[in-house]
Length: 337
Ligand code: COA
Image 1 (cartoon, protein in one colour):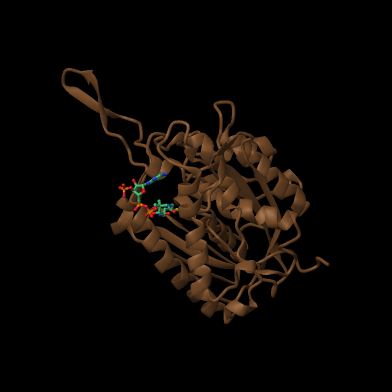
Image 2 (cartoon, helix red, strand yellow):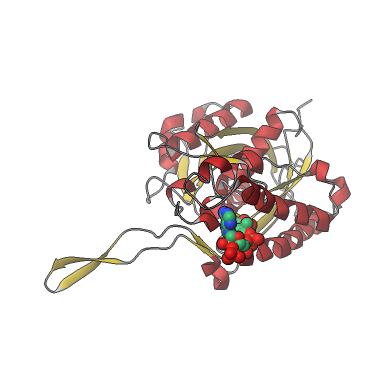
């Protein structure tokens, strides 16, 4: 894909609730164990939002860090995309992030695509920049799925955690491409594998009229189907993205996958022939934070100077929908040392 306008990824940020919940703590009320959860998923602990925490506040903290790292003023932000499936306002939580940042010249809206949401939002942001419509975009991924799991269902609740992450993306000189290829897909026929579906209840308005009420079921998942889907689909889309860019797996600096399960990370890396040392993982500390996993991991790796300017990262998000996406990312701006 040739870029009329270049793209640079110039800032990152992350925020998580303070409360750490270990596997041992879960086994205080669930028939589970640290050994079961670690061996099947790689998860040791997760952050859980208390009633005082807020998705909009965590998303805003992450976005503010990304903005500051990029060196922008709030009034220079053109667009804020918030990928979330657990907004605090079904009309959209992105405007709350805009208000918190005082990014008053921006337009802000939500994107819902579950665990693929951040990657879909990043790809969407790139289209606005390539077209010349916008110069500076904050892409935020945030989810508090602890509010939506059934805490008595050991098959699902042990997997998820809460968090937020953000990336600053800006127009760059032609020739510098921070997002050289992308692939996206969904298969709605398999949407029932992973859902947080509307709960149909009735309210009687008067004798002749009944209306439905709002509400949702907790997360329901066919774990084995989702696992099979991930280990088959993710290597395919990553290979497609590499092929489009004319890049081999050996040329990558990092593999940054949606953090769902350590066994999925290992299987995908093995199929692509990527050594374990290049696989970024913080799943052990946070579990699956849905739309937040990729920017949360990215930010940690940037802060630790593992990801450095110029590094090439293959990233893939996947999950409910079923949905999947992959993109190659080049970190940093052209003038960086
Ligand atoms: N603790 C202890 N035992 C548990 C358990 C838990 N938290 N969860 C399930 N089990 C039990 C099951 O009840 C079952 O017991 P049974 O044989 O007596 O019925 C047994 O463990 C095996 O369950 P199964 O569902 O076959 O386990 P699995 O090996 O498929 O692992 C997952 C389950 C969820 C870890 C795995 O399927 C997975 O990771 N899937 C992908 C999920 C995912 O990443 N989703 C998000 C994508 S974005």
